[in-house]
Length: 255
Image 1 (cartoon, rainbow, N blue to C red):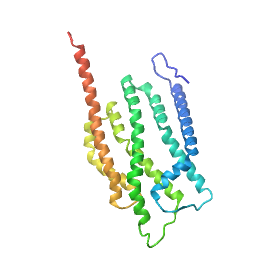
Image 2: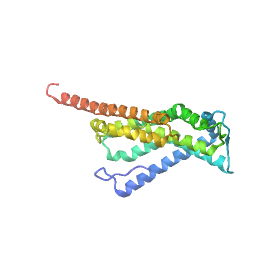
Image 3: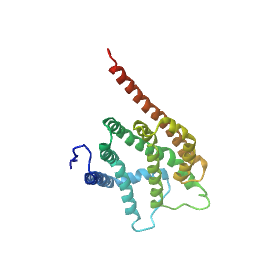
Image 4: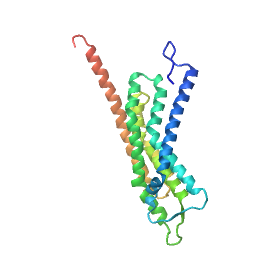
């Protein structure tokens, strides 16, 4: 449904609500389509997710556990598949309140948002999960044989991958905030110490282990991503200043 704007180019409250309903409907369709597609291939996805468990035999203890896990994996995979569409709908809903330049910045950031989320998932799968599972499954294994339910294993794995995907969005979000003139890179730099503390707190929350080594696998990348975000925020404002300087030069008499 196309938006209807008033004479001043602004949307009324009812039009905003109708626009929100329209965007949520499209986003929901995308998520449902992604979930259906993921469910078709859910056995391959489950096989991929259970590889870090190695030779550990996963078990089920409830009649509906296998079905519930298949649906959860399909839903989370469908969310990742539909992520570009979901972000696009959010940007389109916010676009009437943005300037053409701000709208362009958000559209150009869409691929970065998707790639960084996928990068975070890949980091969690290939770097974080293997040592974490090795520690958890091997701890006191000579005293008690671990019998891990597939529900417990998949819930833990999916949670780790999801949060790592979100964490890796940090530099892109910092760049967008700087481009929209909401936060300066100097402000991010002043928050550096707080960011380091928060990185280790998140490392303790995200990782399922209590050893500092695995927690550092999360905390150190977060700190690195935050530093990258500061640089991107500086780059965003620097590019803006260069554009302003070019326009000023072009506006000078005789140029």
